[in-house]
Amino acid sequence: MKTTRRQFLATSATGVASLSLLASAATAAEPKEKAPKAAAPRLSFAQPAKMKLGTVTYNLAMDWDIATIIKNCTEAKFDGVELRTTHKHGVEVTLDKAQRAEVRKRFADSPVQLAGLGSAFDYHTADPAKLRKDIAATKDYLVLAHDVGAPGVKVRPNGFPKDVPEAKTLEQIGRALRELGEFAEGYGQKLFLEVHGTGTQLLPNIKTIMDVANHAAVGVCWNSNPTDLAGQGFDHNFELVKRKIMTVHMRDLHLEDYPFRKLLGGLNGIGFTGFCLAEIPQSSDPVRLMKYYRSLWLAYQNLL
Image (cartoon, rainbow, N blue to C red; front, side, top):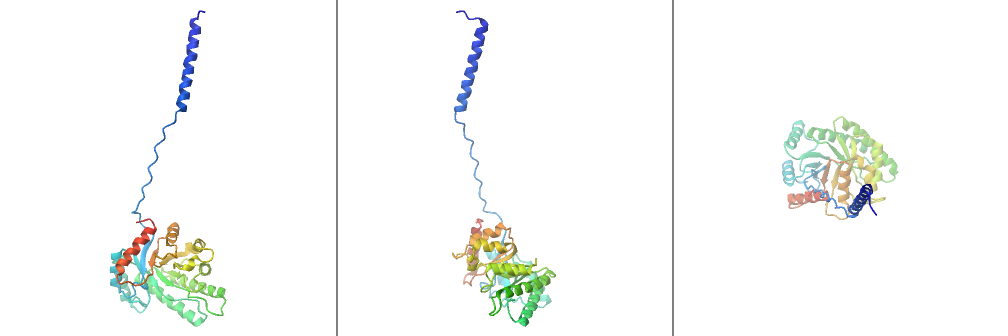
């Protein structure tokens, strides 16, 4: 049978189209080459810590004068110190104007910051006269803190007095702190309420005190107590006061009864930029101990 030119061209076009479809199908069936995996981000171990590391003079530095405090903290790369009352540093309300100016200058001229003054004033007493005396003495310390260049004064509750309803005591402490907060504000100072005292150190009670005080100049000194894990647990207790934490005391970081990594993670999570202060025992080789402490503090934050 003869094939016309028109029929030949039509048949050829159909064949080419079929071959093209087959080729496309074959190509689609072939496994596609996998895109190269993105390189894993490199971990940086040189990130600046949001927080600062320091020490309290209780107990490690209780026998150090100011020169020794500055020297040892500088060598160990500690950023600051809280000077607790009665220790050898001698920064007390008895200092005159010139002596206070000298303390301010010595810290200002060094890489070590004065992170605060540590007092033992408390406001839980059932004796109204003692309560007024402690409030007045705290005001004197707030003026001292202003004069020597410290940002504030650490105070504390120290338990519940007998035969007084706990709710009444918590309200009394909170009201005292509100009065002190108003006074501190005029000097650019803060009150750091240490999480302290049998019963009063429970975080729900500290929150109640903070709610009564209700002042921007009054905050919490987190104290790293085993009771931080009581009740509904660490996460719940941290959440109760996390927005009021102004400074932190830490025990030996090797202790396994406390979640220090979780604490530091929580502090970084809220953007805390204050001081973590080592409250640890004395040592015959203090600077070496401080260097180890700093290394572990950094390691807990994945910064070392």
